[in-house]
Image (cartoon, rainbow, N blue to C red; front, side):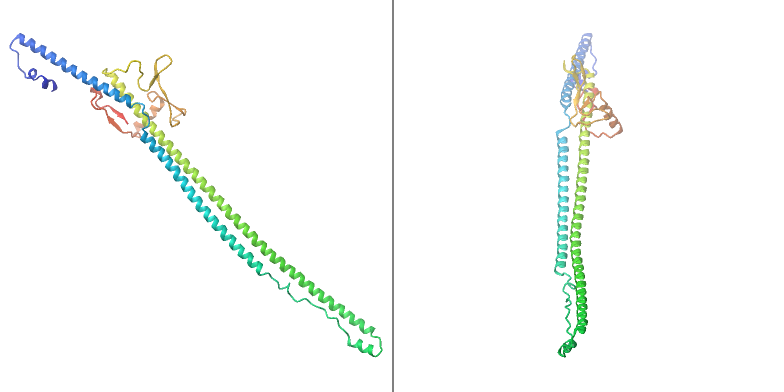
Length: 342
């Protein structure tokens, strides 16, 4: 349609009336067709050059800053949240420990004070026996009559000795009972002190178990966060590698059309020159320092020729890769439906 729009006379179906007219007609038609083909070729070459420039600028950009920035933000936010939760829970645990210690000390102090103020004194304050020396009236009468009272006095003395012994035994018994009474009081006070010490030790043990549990939970949460962040970084690098591979494929197809050639002395994307000046697959640093299917951490071979491409291809084949796509518009014939992953 574009040819007929440009050269309506040649498409009108009119027949030349002479050989000269026919010759001129054929020459004009050929010239018009040649110009149309040249214009088409020029447009295709220009489009190919523009596409090559665009694709080369897109190649090797790595993980978009917006994505890596979001991952870093999630990491810092997660660490801050976990740390704040640990601080809050530890503060609550410490507050309850302090309250428990206060209640325990107050309770046992009141008990010990009560025992001190209420000493058992029943036996300690009991009236002690005082023996009375007996004087025999008979001996006095006999002495008044001039008769020796020796026989009667001996019996009186024996009675006095017996009375003094009985009083001493009674008083000794009271002293023994008072000692036991005091020992019992001291035992109760000691038990109260031991109960206080044991209760405080139990509180300390519970507090230690609580802090250990909090620390364990904090470490587990941080480990889970680190795993999530590592997986996110790995996935973003996989998508960046898949995008570069799609760009390489698009450039290869573009060079295959012949409309544009790689710059002289420049290796295709994903390759670099070796010591002999030959283009070989490039080995690039692995920013996330991850390991994939036995590939050593720190390096990943170029996606065009590496095991990483196989992983990405398997992911795409299984439908697990979900990178977005932007169509290349205005390319030469076979490039019209090419797609590049972004």
